[in-house]
Length: 185
Image (cartoon, rainbow, N blue to C red; front, side, top):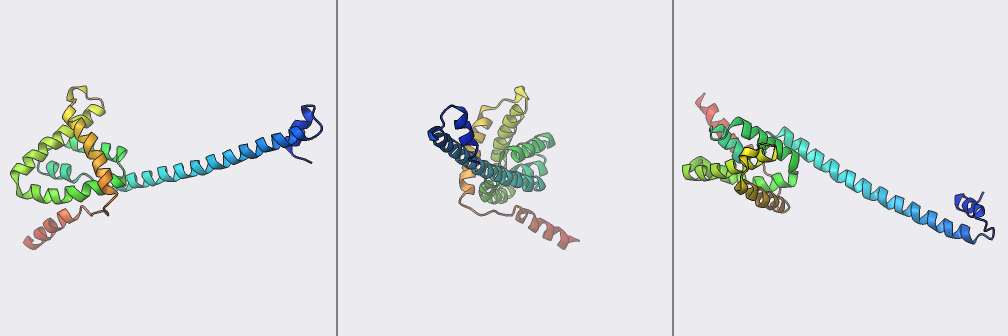
């Protein structure tokens, strides 16, 4: 009739109810902690679900890495490195990283198309990053400290930039090519 805290207090030998009041407060605090942990758990689950959705949308986007896509398309990056880089970005980077990366990488690819020197420079950077990613996936012969430094600086920088910009569509890089090839047909 009086609840579980009253029954526990009755079993302790105190029948004046004082222990029951104290145990009732304990039950109340325990219930409140469970409620807070439930809310925290729900927030964490929502955050994780949003990250999974972002990764799923990135998985549908094979050109999430526009610089490596450009270099691979020109034959300047191996298919194995390209695919391993895609796998790494899908597994470890969020939608916010992609937004920040696309903010500067899409205009850069336009520059790379016009400049062989810029392409050669960014090829060195992309290969250093690819070596570091291969090392992370277990290829100890490809350890590259410069690539590790690029990831350590570049990924947080992209995340930071991604907080200030809206998403850009990488397909704009290929619209002109598609329009140009349709005119020739």
